[in-house]
Amino acid sequence: MKNVAVLGSGVVGQVLADGFLKHGYNVMRGSRDPKKLAEWKVKAGAKASVGTFAEAAQFGEVVAIAVKGTAAEAAVEQCEGHLAGKTVIDANNPIADLPPVNGVLQYFTGPNESLMERLQQKAPAAKFVKAFSCVGNAFMIDPDFHGQKPTMFICGDDAVAKAQVKGILDQFGWETADMGVVTAARAIEPLCQLWCLPGLTGGGWTHAFKLLRL
Ligand SMILES: NC(=O)c1ccc[n+]([C@@H]2O[C@H](COP(=O)([O-])OP(=O)(O)OC[C@H]3O[C@@H](n4cnc5c(N)ncnc54)[C@H](OP(=O)(O)O)[C@@H]3O)[C@@H](O)[C@H]2O)c1
Image (cartoon, rainbow, N blue to C red; front, side, top):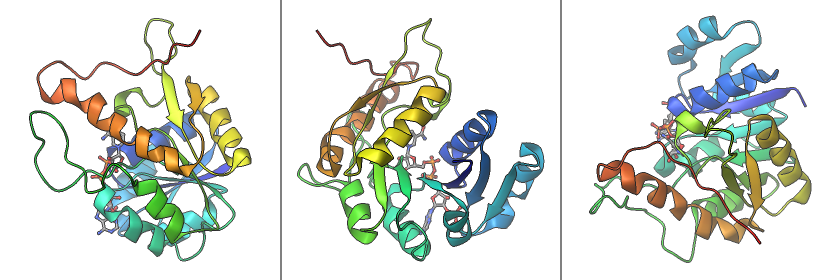
């Protein structure tokens, strides 16, 4: 697998796209307005390209989606069927357009549902895998915690897709904890609220989760 699509013109899209390029992949970034990514394309070099969400989704053997949570379902729709049969990395969080409450981000989903379940329903033939949602973008690629590998929590229904994402996370310097099927996104997505809480209350943003096991 060499061709990766990264849907998202925001900071996470840029970090993931640059990370895939750094690790030897060809990357097409997707946006509703690909012109806004022209400067990035020039800087990113010959293995980088840009297109619409549908063009990028068609290009990618693996597709990573990193868009505004409230727009994630619309972005999946705009892929026009090109996600079918592919591993789709879901980095999105269901953050509502409302201010945090005492540092806790507000979500537009409830506790017994998740954004990834909604996305999987929108594109049933895609193989969604939750990943990169529980850490700030500064640590997504080759995180340096003085030799300790942080844990990326993933989930999804397709075992082969999860193995593919684990392979990517191995390359990107992460330890992977597979939490199970798509329903587990109900437990993984709130980790973003926990991760952001110290930052939003003055405690800093330089942390990541580590799962300890006996
Ligand atoms: N920031 C972090 O460190 C971090 C960490 C972990 C997870 N996440 C999650 O990663 C995702 C991306 O975050 P971000 O900060 O990089 O970017 P963002 O500002 O949340 O999202 C920007 C992207 O959303 C798309 N978008 C906005 N409205 C849209 C609409 N109506 N229809 C379709 N697409 C629309 C934009 O498309 P256009 O390109 O067409 O404008 C753009 O690509 C979020 O879900 C966030 O919760 C963020």
